[in-house]
Length: 162
Image (cartoon, rainbow, N blue to C red; front, side, top):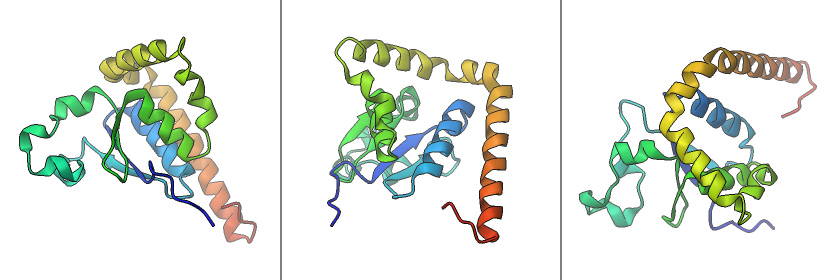
């Protein structure tokens, strides 16, 4: 019997207009076999924060963060309405797909402030960083798409890996 984790499902509120952010969320989405993550694109034209923000904040419009606040950091919302931001959200998202060990060192007392500062810097410069990395992001997206197509083809042939 599997017990529910109080943090999951975790709703990730991310900016898909940032190529690096989109690349990471696409990888997490692909690895999300257990459905522990939900994805919401805050840059979508029809994005409405009130639909996703914890119920306690719904009645208080001034309690809702602005789009500028949302763009300052990745936000995650647990099923209990707990809001997570920045590196903590990344740690939880990676843990949800079985890769928590990658980000676990960012909890260590010596690394945590560095990881938090590096994340804040990245978040405020992500469009410039993405512009420089766009050719690499495009190649990674292309290789991932090819690998997924190959897996689907093998599955169609009766050798599923899914």
